[in-house]
Length: 258
Ligand code: SF4
Figure (cartoon, rainbow, N blue to C red):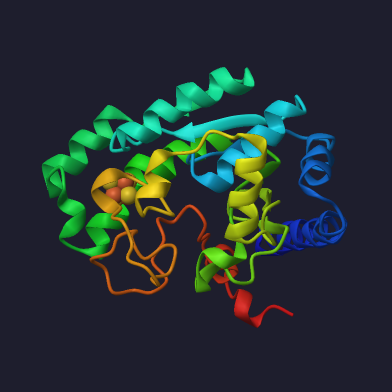
């Protein structure tokens, strides 16, 4: 693909995302999800079984929407999270499709870094997330046009400007964040009112839950995601799922393109 056609493709994604963003802004959660389910192209919702994701799963299951629900079984999840996958399927009568890392990738990682090598350096941690999360995510999103997530603006400073829809040109899809404008109090009230099953770890000081060795409980007053990869200093640390490469890495000389 030429640089010119890449630029045109990115521009088309961004234009579609902007239109969708404006339409989604005027709707409630059910309306947002129904709109995406009705679009041409496959929609995939990836759930970590966190409280936000449970709200979305409940809405998808309750309204029988044509949205595939998927999760990344990294092999390092909390037992509570694994148990919640089954419970959520039973509650809503849906299938949560599991995506696993490749054994060969895990073997290679362990041979090079050790099973818990992610504590040794940011690079080793990103390598682990790459093998256990990013590669399975790529399979989950293969062929999808829309990727629904539970991102919220209040989760961290890094997510403070999360839109309802954004172009993910690297993955060739539009990312939909239907809870972008919900705060944690609204989420908790909704879960209580609707009887939505949630991870018991939330009530033990874990507002954000990832892999067990990389998540700790937070102290009162700490940011919601302070317990994720807590040993790293970078305030904006993420696993890479929601940090696509900058346009400049997709389009050669993008910074000069006008
Ligand atoms: S969160 Fe931790 S255990 Fe999970 S994939 Fe990333 S580095 Fe590996």
